[in-house]
Image 1 (cartoon, protein in one colour):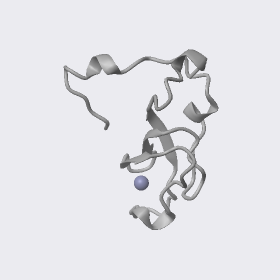
Image 2 (tube, protein in one colour; image 1 turned 120 degrees about the horizontal axis):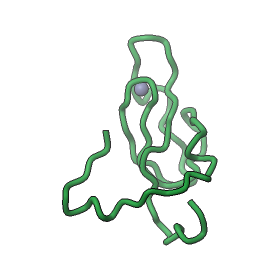
Image 3 (cartoon, protein in one colour; image 1 turned 90 degrees about the vertical axis):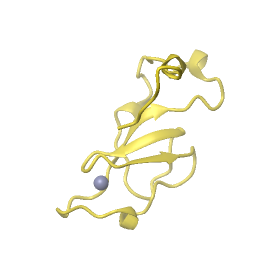
Image 4 (cartoon, protein in one colour; image 1 turned 90 degrees about the horizontal axis):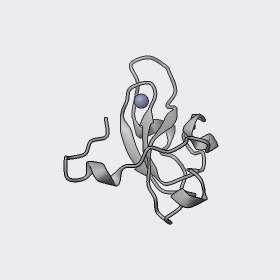
Length: 87
Ligand SMILES: [Zn+2]
């Protein structure tokens, strides 16, 4: 689970969640829609990924089951002061 300390919690903003990236789940190799922290919905492992890069490949990590990796956005990085343009 992504973490913060008391000093940095004020750097997090609650957003409206209108961006499709909040509800969509991504597969290995998909293009990263927005920079941030993503977690695998199966095992909760997290990665940081940059916009327009591919998500880590299927062999990034293994699951005990045969379930495939699915990435979910957890924390979006405000790399371009975008919050005023929508989230
Ligand atoms: Zn996983």
